[in-house]
Amino acid sequence: MIFDNPPLNLMGPEFVLEFREIMAAIETDEQVKVVVFESAVEGFYLNHSDFHAKLED
Image (cartoon, rainbow, N blue to C red; front, side, top):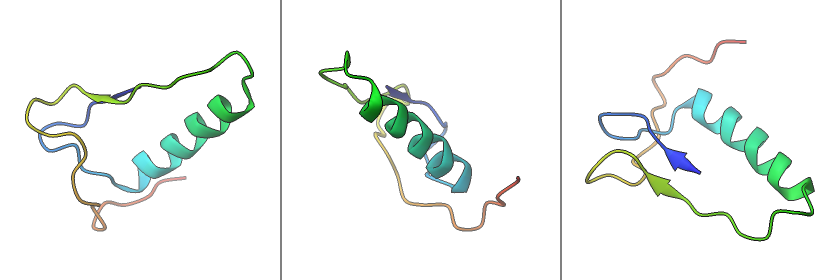
């Protein structure tokens, strides 16, 4: 799983929803044994939450 939200890899509401969906799919897939998390943004893995971002339905 590659985190790619330049320039700082902020975790906003959209990220949280998408991450929860992905994790739920991974947890129910018996073929998945390992998940590797990495960042596509050089110098940043995951950064602070962005509470000012708007959540769209």
